[in-house]
Amino acid sequence: MNTENASTPALRGPWLVIARAVWITIAVVTLVLFVASIPLVFNELRTVSFGEGPSIWQLRPDEARALEQLGLSVGFYAIYWIVIQIIFVLGFAVVAGVIFWRKSDDWLALFVSLFLLMFGANTVTAVPVPPTNLTAWYLAYKIIQDLVFISVPLFFLLFPDGQFVPRWTRPLAVGWTVFGLIKRWLPLSAPPGDLILLGSLSLGALAQIHRYRRVSSAVQRQQTKWVVFGFALTLVVFTSVQLLFVIFPWLRQPGAMLYRLPALTVILLSLLVLPLTIGIAILRHRLWDIDVIIRRTLIYGVLTTALGVMYFGTVVLLQAAFRAVSGQGQSEVVTVISTLAIAALFAPVRRRVQDAIDRRFYRKKYDAAKTLAAFAATCRDETDLDKLTASLLAVVQETMQPAHLSLWLRKDFGAPKRAMPLEDKAKP
Image 1 (cartoon, one colour):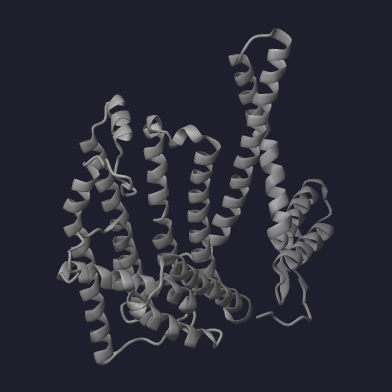
Image 2 (spheres, rainbow, N blue to C red; image 1 turned 30 degrees about the vertical axis):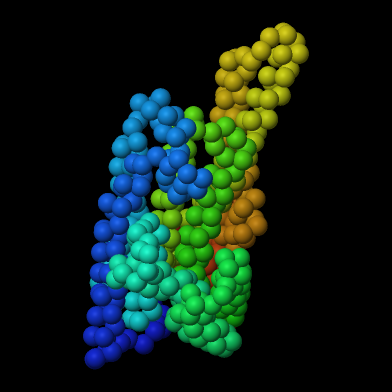
């Protein structure tokens, strides 16, 4: 299947040199800021906060004591998060570098790769706040931060072909860029600014829906699917982890640090799905694999949820029945029985979930699979060659819908040729 499609015009001559120079300059400044912030972040992480508002990663005294009870020091905690943050930034930087290396003459690819690099590094970069706010380090950090703020809605307005579709997105992009450049001098508090950002992202999402349904080609739709899949998977992971903290309040207690550390790590590293899926979409690498990935994600996501609910319900009901009959507390036998029951239900539930998803979202493939299964049953029972060849032609026609269909047989197996010309013209 051909995945090539018209792309944004290639940069040439002096414009290409200028664009690459700007990209390299901003990328170097962004990475230097991150590297320079590592000692600052490390000192903050290994310092226990006794104030009212510690940073998101800084430990409170009760959390530090909980870590010590687990045999982990505050120094280990600081080193752990520094390593995780470096991995996080490297994930974004590697994808951005590959895009730049492969498609540095495409201005949209340059924009997206620089946006990924700035977003990844700026998320975990910190700088000391000087009294005058005029140091070069602080100003450079704020400039990168403003560029990230501007780039987020622009990405949704321009992806995947770099065109402003529909037309009202062009003045929106200009207005948003101007707002992003001057917002620090505007008398805006946090809530109005957040609402403006949310409104711009919503308009960008509407533009993407319009583009996907009315304008995008087959290749561009596959690109959009990859990006949407990345955002959706990240959102699902984040929501699932947060839901665990709501369902099990004890996870928010200091003594649950052994469980909270992996949970927070999963939240941060799940963001690495975004550069990976965006990179695949920009480089157009194995675009059509996304259909298989989405299908399997839906199947096993629904299956896991269904089995989890069934397991939880079975354990609760059986434990209640056991207490009512025996008058005792919880029984390990009930847990074993519930586990064996779920294991036995795995295969039939998976088949039912797969059939339901295929019927709802992959109807054409589902019908083709049913047709092929019926033909396989016919092959086992049919002995008449003419009827078998007629069935084969009908199956190929129904599943593949070619413009012309012919079946050639060896002479010693019957007729030299059997053909079925079709009047329908080839579909584009």
